[in-house]
Image 1 (cartoon, rainbow, N blue to C red):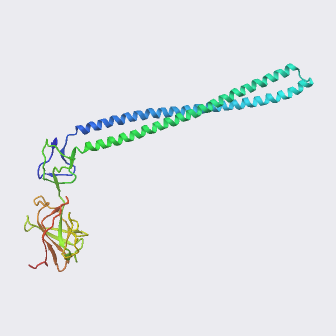
Image 2: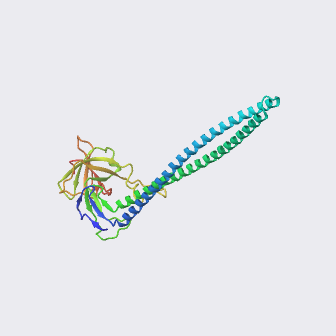
Image 3: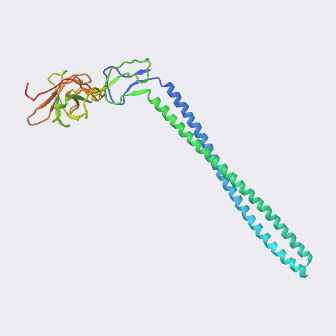
Length: 333
């Protein structure tokens, strides 16, 4: 621990700093992950440029293929026409209508057209193979770009985790309350899960362990009067918030079990949560471990009351305690 911002029994507000531990190791991890994110983003940008270049290349090769295909079709049409002319000229030369020289010229033109057609067909085959290769290169570039983007996501997740770990080096108060049981000082080494202090919130409630036979007429919302042993004559007002669905013994660390089959009926205690309706001023400190005597008014007119003497005021830190219970009516000894 490098800094402690609170003292014993100090009132702190929600968000106030409590203490800090050495952040240098976590800051280094954050810096390293930030550099990793930057490097992965640059790599992804390069892969994106490569992919876009491959897309342009595929479009160029496709245009070349279409041009070669058109040239091949034109050469095929020309060769077919000259071949038809050669067949007619052969018949005309046999009858003497055209000279032998004209027939030879027609034959040479036809052979030249066929050779040009073969050349164009070879060019078209080459363009087809070139287009397929360019398509494969484009798919490979796309896969590399996708992989680079995934690496960015992983690096950003690692950075977020490192930043979260860094934020844990500065501990703040989760709620407004009083500091209690501070057990550390600046310079102490802390272990994972070590309790360094308790925070008692300003909002408190009482957990009264009533007998199950006292719950017949008790309902949530009924008013209650609370007398604190530490402040004789001072009465606090509250109401029943809820009644636990089960006895306190059943939810204890070692609940009782009747393994032998012998059963003795014992009246069980049921926790009843009583919430204060008023804000306790600073001159009356309430916290876990203080004894109180709450009275729950179950009939407003006749004012009979169930009174329970318990051994603790329970704060919202969640501590639970039980004690002796008794039943009487208001105004009776």
